[in-house]
Image (cartoon, rainbow, N blue to C red):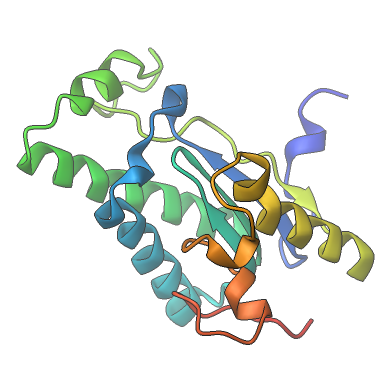
Length: 176
């Protein structure tokens, strides 16, 4: 079966995506790095037709439930832009994390000095409303399962608030 399980076969269908920082480094403990993700998502929503159904941003990874006219390209753009901006930000602050991002860079990545994201995003095509609800529940309960909060609504970087009718930090489409 190979890697077919983790490919975007229908680029217009919603997918559950997982993006992980190399070596699970906790880059998203810094709100400025989270804002870089939000800025990229907002741009893709405005300019590339990205529809975001749900998200959670943890300290070292994020889950997205999204679709776009060309989801593969949107995801590549997301990872490229966010990596570039986070490296710039870390360089401005002379952060020692840059050394880790350089050390853990895959050898075949000769076009860059640092690697922020692990390769791939393990996309899973969402097959119907029941699966969409299951993935949203998983996303929203991720911080609860990790023991960070007791209620999904208490996690700042999640779409749980959007689904509860509260103001979220980024636009989410809750009607499918």
